[in-house]
Length: 176
Ligand code: 5GP
Ligand code: MG
Image (cartoon, rainbow, N blue to C red):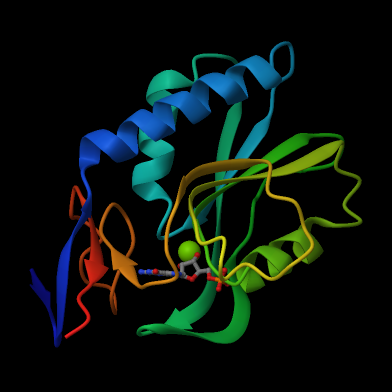
């Protein structure tokens, strides 16, 4: 499979990804029983993950989105900027961040800082994909869907220069 100037190969099928999301949704519903958490999806990458998660999270909640910028091409630039913020008050809320992927954890650290000292009741991260060998931050990630090697992936919401987000499966960069 080719996107722009790079070759990718199938790594995970939609069925594999979606069974991990269903399991996470059920765990979240159990953990947040009796509360009304505010889920905050991180755009653009989380759109498929979030949509799939709420097929199985069938309890009271609210859903909002933020947008950050940090990735250019195949490697992280380390630059993180807030492009869109949550419009509702987060004070006293149980907040769950929905991330597509945690790589170095740089974006996540920015999110943690962004939501700190806002008098949030509880704050947890839920990420669909996680690269354990790349993550070098202290912050504990409460919900991790699928562990990945430290390679570049596309599909299921994740892009390569904005291409490939619509792909149903996950593809990994081919080492030629
Ligand atoms: P981090 O700040 O943890 O290094 O990277 C976080 C962001 O970089 C993710 O939210 C995602 O947008 C992007 N990213 C990290 N790894 C990958 C990858 O393998 N593929 C794609 N398409 N984006 C990635
Ligand atoms: Mg992202």
